[in-house]
Length: 465
Image (cartoon, rainbow, N blue to C red; front, side, top):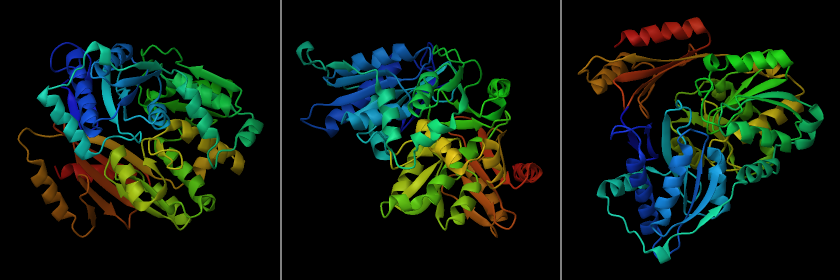
């Protein structure tokens, strides 16, 4: 598959040829990022934090990144195997100029990616990202003499730092969690989650932890996206040992899904909804630091809006993508946010999706409410969210098609922030259409109170094409 370049970095399948991610195009992009930071921070010593997930190609690309950066005279803090949120935390902690994450997130094992962070440990904004892309095209890099090479410092303990910082956050109660004596199964999907999640649970006082798919070799035992169809092994393990719950993360630990004590899927969408419910009902803890606001993306469940309104809070939906959600959260001074794919953003800690902080908040909520995971789900608004796609005929003008659909549904609420979203307020349902930048397809998300209603809405929208 062709390499995908964007303002956040590059990703693709690893292999030979210009259409794949290989050492040549990877190094070029690393150098472009280094050059960007040197120009941005003139006459200042540059320091970049670099880390990777457990993918097979991770160590190779890590070495390439480090040695490329020092050739530009840039110092490197190598934290090696680490989750995406851990790398973000390290950038802040090290007062670094930026960060490089080597991870293709939930994509299959043959993929890898280079993701770029600014000095705040956040993904680059549009202007910065486009500047890096232009630097990569210019291929004009300011290499230094050997005496001026950057220095390398290795710090492979940052997961512990990350976990210890979580324990100090408001709304995290280690004493109550320890007292509950949870029995938990973790699906580490043969990546950094196998290490990071158990470290956090140990810090929280959870002693009975079973890890499946724990070998960190990047040979993913199942499709690494933590959605229901991929977690059958976790369902069985939870039931077999009669655990209180199961925890699933993706390979870089920024997405989080739970399994209840019966071995049933709790739902990625419900991860954000349940954590938001806890944070909003505890809002008084934050005083005037934030506003009583939650933020998610346009493809996320209405359940978040319902829960927010239960606590007289406002809910806003941004364009899809972590950077867009973070931008909206800052704009609205939101106390909680994230994405419906299981990404929790808790600004009291940092502005990045963080499965580890999500675990700590979720467990604290369970023990404070003295309920089981299945009981918590019953208390949440019930919706069915259908995610699918349709292939487009060659030559079809998507923009004109969207205009035609918009006119057809003009009597309903229409949002064109990111693709086309149509909200059927009376029916408590919506459809979100987004065109792919890499494939001739339209992604369609439909949500309604029941599965049948969501399927009917999908058929209705699909027929418009």
